[in-house]
Image (cartoon, rainbow, N blue to C red; front, top):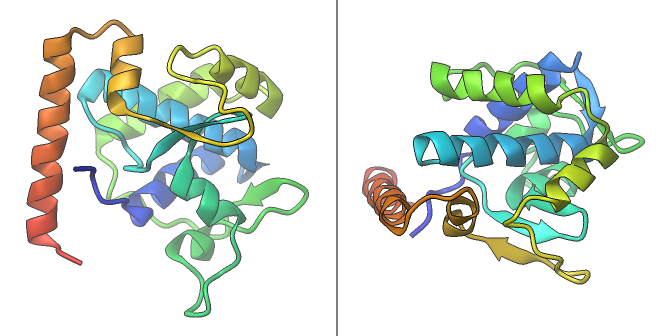
Length: 184
């Protein structure tokens, strides 16, 4: 069982990155930074920030649903929460339209966002593609996409089988609880 995607929280994380970058950046860079934030959060806290699915794509690992939100047209029902706060790409860049707040983010998550930005925010989108191609969990999908499981990331950074199982069990328990609290 996976955590349900939290579009509000993902939008708040992306918005914080855009604020740190001055309000605008390449959407490929944004997608890479969000992946790195999720990766770091999983390694250090046992869960991701965006709650998105991770996949290997030709240009490296990505946060799948956020990539779709970034590049897709608005649905007939109107703009998504994401699109109300983050612009569609223009010349491959997105901009912060308005701040969605940060009430879904914990202080620890905000620190991870800032730390990852401090380490990688000055890199170009192409430098981030190269960097993420060298992450051990990335696999060349030969033009398609390959899911990246939490286990893949945790194993790649040297977590033991017991540590990996504990993280998976905690995430599954949290997902089951959330499904009971807010079923769809």
